[in-house]
Image 1 (cartoon, helix red, strand yellow):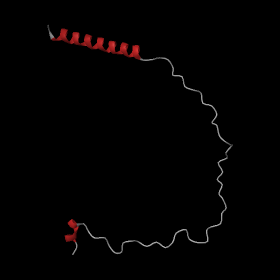
Image 2 (cartoon, one colour; image 1 turned 60 degrees about the vertical axis):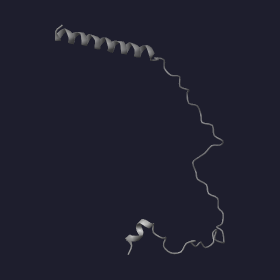
Image 3 (tube, one colour; image 1 turned 120 degrees about the vertical axis):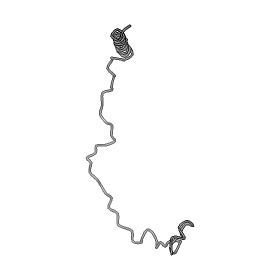
Image 4 (cartoon, helix red, strand yellow; image 1 turned 30 degrees about the vertical axis):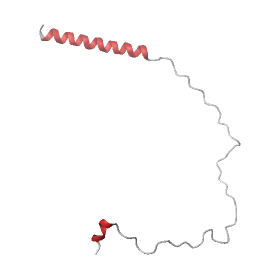
Length: 87
């Protein structure tokens, strides 16, 4: 068998494989259009206009939090591996 015959047989086998894959794809693919529900009106409690409303309440007369102070005073100690770097 010479090289030309071998190439021709390989091309024939490749072409047959492509045709077989196409047939298998067409056989397993659904061509029907998917049924999508038609959109309807969006139910709301009441009509909205997009307007922002704010309540008019007076500000509190006393602060809502008292004075806050940290529990720890001064700088935090360094980790042991960094203690020798200072100095």
